[in-house]
Length: 601
DNA sequence: CTAGGGTTAG
Image 1 (cartoon, rainbow, N blue to C red):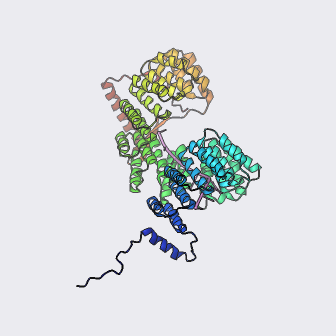
Image 2: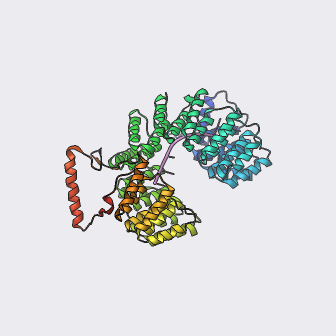
Image 3: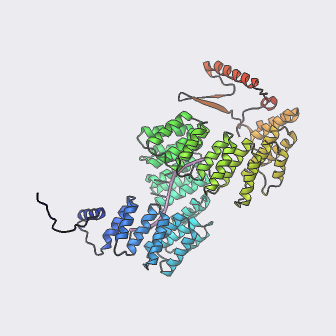
């Protein structure tokens, strides 16, 4: 048999990226590179666009000569894929190699400083920009503003940069408004927008959508309606992002019918439109949230993790285990179970639906856990009375290097208080002040008062209130009142209730509790007085109701409800349960329940 | 090759 000898002893393999590049040049016949690295830089960019970070880096490393453009492409590429610290490293390598940054480089690297929320990096780049004479480029100036707006505690630095931007363009204004809005200062954002209007700057979908978002933060629909009318004049009501934020604004301002009206009138909707409405309904009407979700699926929109976080939370609100499980299956089917925020909401849902072992399963399955994951699991244990587990988790969390915030402290404190773990709870409270230098707010004090009060240390709780550095609010007094009621201390209870009424005279529940205190003491005159005051509040009484999910149907019922043919059975089961309870020694406390009315706050 | 907008969690 003949062997074929290759004419060349060695054929260099053609890397796949070069093949791609060849295809690219064939597709672009007009292409004639003046600069040999032009092609490679373009390829790097398209690799980043496709998320092929490794390929981009490999090609960059293989380039014999790398100009500013190539370096800048790497920095911008890493940042666009959320690899901000890698972008920062590349920038430092570039400086070390003596390549001079241009305005493109600086604005890209400033975006990465913003992503890292790194003020010192920002100031460093600011200094370099001054050194290289790049301040004054509108791109550099705008991104400098953006860094200061996101990394500083106040808007002062950003405003100082803004003042010197000349001439300002639409982006400068939008960045200023967004600076206020993203830090939660809706009125600041609206003020900046108003200034933008009065200075006659050119309006766009960008400026309006962020202004509408600012308005949503203020929860004031009056401004929102004006903005809505104004943007129609500008013809911006065909912009999806603008209309999406209008829907969001109406939802936050409790104008649900306006929100759904806009939704219906929109000729085109995207996933965010649906998600916005679903999240909006979740906050005020979880049942409707679920029906919008059903409608969305029936119209062929594929839900994403944002959709599911709202829908799972709605199931949690309504304690719909069955429904929640089906949604969970849907999540698994779509491969979204690795999303951390979504897994966190599943932990909460299973806990609120009474299936705490499922909460734990999700928690254990999470490869990445954040503060919310740990806190959700602690709250789950807390409400189920597993105080020790919650404390254990709290300590584990700290060992894993996560710093607790006030919500995490509230979770562990309330878990301790429900399980009677006074010492552990007080230890956490102390560490909050001494180890974490946090200033406990009224909610935290409320938890500690509850912790002491439930354990019968009502006097100690009262002492704590008297020594609080901030004025106790109604939630703190409420916690004390609760423990006075439980431990039969009517005099201290009356005091607490009076303070509560001073703080919140509109709460019918306080009148109710106070009137019951008078009733338990036989002070019927005062009892009648409280009841009269309560009636004066008018329209605030709202019967509570319970509900149960049976075979995917939900049955709700209230006190004295007529359930039709099922009533008899319900009461039969109830009397059986009462017999069981009495058999194990339960003595009902009729002192208060006798006079309780169902009252909403 | 570069900047600005919308949805989410305890």
